[in-house]
Image (spheres, one colour):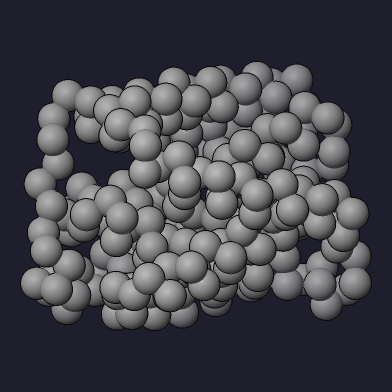
Length: 231
């Protein structure tokens, strides 16, 4: 959600800091809704969720209260574009080569503990500084490094994003300066979109999803790079 909302807000000349808060609010509510559904379905892997959520929340607080006020929005937009290009590279890799997956019950979480910490820190900072939940970071890392099945990687990502997004806008929540109208209206659309997307996933081929994500990631990366140039 955040990867779409941030470029949209900035193209609409919404101030960067406001765009981050509004995007995180939308991602928070959509992630919360999706996680409740995943919990009902069962199969959520708690170990990686907790290990990623704790450092992610701490880093999101640091980013929200301190770092976002010291780093240039232009630099943050360039970093955003870079993440989108890396994400495009991941989907390009998926188009060429099938990724091996491991049964979720046999994953050695202790072995991947350092990965979980690093990903959690990265996602926490990305949320508070870039306005994205971090799914585009968590899912590729878990799939390529730990060989998670895509559905389990998504479940973990959505759960972790509840905490990183909430603490990502915590500073302005404390100051009572959140953009409730923009963030709230976007959250409604995001929740509806997540619901429709979960239905569509049952009928759309994985190859088509991969191809669309590859193209969309490239387009969003270019948009953010151009926005940084003319900011």
